[in-house]
Image 1 (cartoon, rainbow, N blue to C red):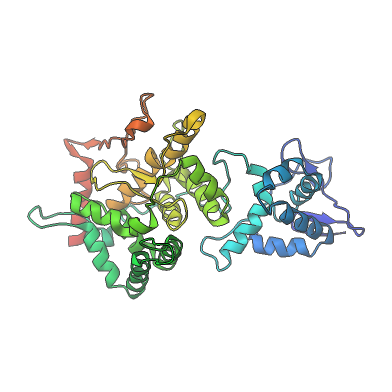
Image 2: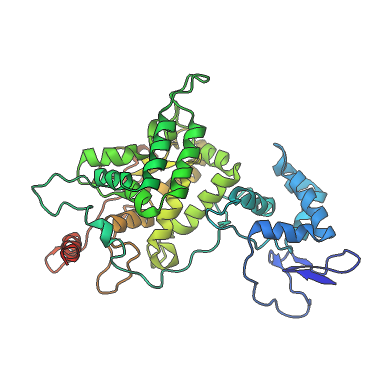
Length: 421
């Protein structure tokens, strides 16, 4: 016989691996021994090619793709024996453990290959999808002032000087040819009227232009526009307007958040980026760290930014600069007996301590900080039982004190000193 990564076949085309339905994971190659360590992942385009080289795998792969076509795919996956048999075979193929690289050339094709298997495993989950992207490394070597070189323009060191970090971020973007070109392109696209629909713009084209901007522009420019720290309403309004929300974010009516999630999950790109955001930006209240991967703030910010330009595009809901809230364009009103499920989903954005800490750390130039003697600014969220959809108030920001003055003042002092050196 021969093997292609995890999928083995004998000469007569029958699978040499059997799927372990008891624990939901592929079985070992010799049934009597314990499973060995899982191999490193391969990208899903390569995994698809490997599967297509094996007649047994290839035939089941074609069946599975047919099972996912049309509106009846949930019923097909649950009740159709051919679909179930195909899924069992594919669970021991290279496709089961494959992943995709963020920003790869054939990203959409790679993600479609991934969901050919995993959509059948998690179709009814409540945002329990695993991320189809390559795993993020833990934050093992943080650099406290990695962003100090660009953070000098973030703060009003001189109290008499008018300060608008978001305006400074726009000026910095205009000085970079790639950023200026891509930013001008999406602003123009998102501001154009669509006479065919009578709308102020084409949201689809606007989303595509925004994704292009965020994919092609270095994060030191794009994230500075998205996460610039504000101390005035004018600054916060400029930050809110960064993605041209009248086109990319708002709509005539607010859909229910569960309906928006359902629409997102029908699109491989939106579903993948939503799953990646949850994996990199959400921790349970019992978790010691405030962000996954040992407080990897940058991974959270990158996952958030990659949601922009999808159906689940998030944004600041208003021009508040001290008590801001981030949310997709949706509501939990009229959720009926699914109100709790809806609120739990919405909290991934409105009540997300990791996201708030990541944005705060970016603004103060201490992104990815892990220093036991000098903790990054933390946020204490109000997660009491009286929190309700009718009063979607953001968590209160609590800045710890260090020897008689606020920790934020400590950061101002250090960043200012570094810039003078």
